Length: 90
Image (tube, rainbow, N blue to C red; front, side, top):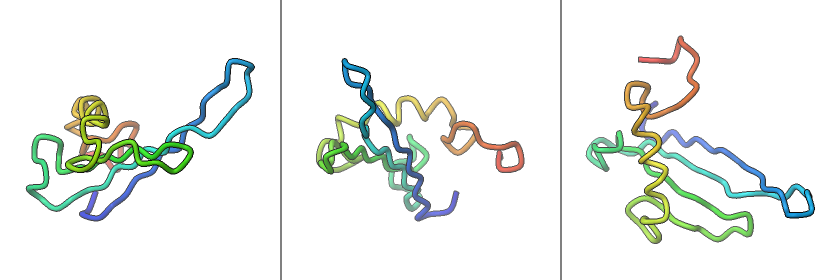
């Protein structure tokens, strides 16, 4: 992906009674080289359904989104992205 690319993944959650509600919004942004080489220079942000920012890489609540990079590091050979069609893979 090119610098400045932002990927968004929405989610939902179920209440104990089975009602479907909006869940967190997960964002990945491809940053300039050197931002965080260990994580492929991706920044992660998690926004709760009520609009509160739960955490963002190298910012407020960064410790709350380390699980994002921990998981995406497993896809290092695909630019840290999962489920890419073959024609977009390195």
